[in-house]
Length: 272
Image (spheres, rainbow, N blue to C red):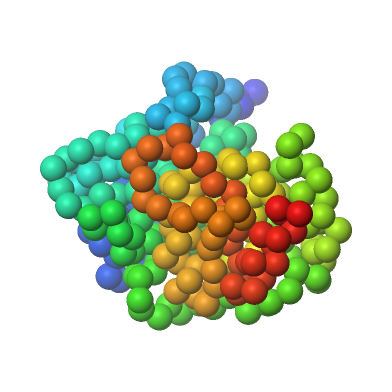
């Protein structure tokens, strides 16, 4: 019996006006993931074949998708800051900051909760973001300073809120439990970029890392543009500034919420 993932990966449904390099990267990610699922089994997709620029293991599916994105960035003549490769200088003032395959464990297993997240940064300033849900083709696009067609739920309190979180870890278990006891509903989807997009469109109220300092800037970059454009807020639980930095060893505990009061209350629960 085959252990390959049988269903196809659709092309992303990109709205008009997406930056050409960002659109090319998103399409490359979908095409590479589709090809990988046709060629490799679940176990082969999940095999750890290298270490990324952030020091964490790289799955085969991560590498295949990132290689395709790197090729698209080179063809578009823009720089790339990506989870596995780190910073690739193609001599441009424009850099694509991408998480090529957020939720790679889901992707390798066939759980349809993984996505591409990318940002156009000009001289280090994020100006445009695109998130594509790889298994459905859905896309969220935002340009800094411009209104978007979707809105957050607007919720301002943790009590009764639907909150997604990273799974609890030994050092963050107490904080995780504090949030869980206050929120109305808790989910663990294992894809920060996707969960942030769901906050932006109002499908859920918030997402947070409960203090484990897991997030790199590539995990949060798309949310930094998309969520504020929809009326929400993105911050670090410990108050550290979120910065586009090529050093992927830097970590944050990101909080993504439907409103600034909700983000601040979540941060307070996380830090105790």
